[in-house]
Length: 502
Image (cartoon, rainbow, N blue to C red; front, side, top):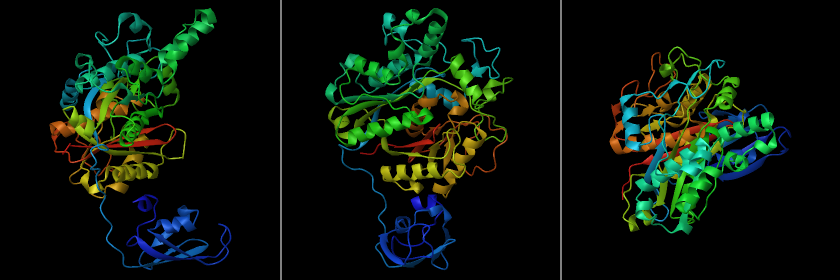
């Protein structure tokens, strides 16, 4: 798969004798050499620049401007299909979910609204937007911390922290590990890993204004603690007593899936029994909106905000900024069974890669994303043919949507049974929290047998070969689903979820 993703086709069975004849010294080779290796990676071992290779399977040669690699296939055992993890101490299951979103803070109601095709996008009234070219977003309304954060602390906290604590505690309650259950888990084997792409941006903005307008003595002593990206998960950890691994990851819009990946690896290594993981974000303030406007990343469809986020539509013109948090309780199967937990779904595996290409633009050929998906499937122990649902990153940007499609077409050669949708068409793009909210949507698709629609499919892009569930929900039994998240800097992340089977 890795060879195919790089543009070099797989030529035969994994074992080859490769005779390399290098006709120049431009790559440090001046004489013929024999290389024996398993798979086409032998070519990579001998050739430093695969991008100039062109394959000719019919002749058995791989040729380039200055060298020829002759490949002679040999009989070899059939390659074993990937196998899923069977060790209950290393299998990772989902036992709780919690969120804060533009569609509310209740997981079941959130998904019901997604299935109904309700949009959470509206005009911004939190601050004056008269000077902004984009005047709408996914603004959270009627959010309450009652029962989760005491009033004194609540007044000081940035929304990024509030969303994390509320969604994290809700997830613990959902897992049967809430305060009424006495947080019944060994605290030294309980972790917390909730990341943020931006951190406490409102506290940062207010602190800078206080400094410039009133001087340093008027800055809050909470300025530094509340702007750093590790503080949401640190304060959540204090609330739930997490004494295991407790830190944050910040990889822009790929953050949540990075956290799931790291959290699962902590469980598989035996570091923890339970870990609360996901993402939180609260960038919907003047400096956040203005920054993304300056990047020319946002839609400016001010005449009809609810139709502004239109992934895979030919008339898409940018993403819609949003906010929120999405958190999962991830647990070893062994621990979940021993405490009699209700198992919602299974996290089969994941992967992280980097495009190493551009600060904000994705690779148009989708190579980095395709590689990430392939690695995630290998980590999950499943083949591409076993995946029949994709919750796509699909932000509604002209370049990003197409790059993701190009990657998906490299990996999934069939499309008749595949369903793919875009949660952002209804809730907008909540940056580092988006993967958490979309993971919950993916898991709810698995447990309900229904996939939510992709809204605003008015003029579908003909390059998309998959069923995007346009405008109306569809019944679909998910055998395995992937959730994609990608971020500025070329960060790619994929999470694989499936129904739990003992």
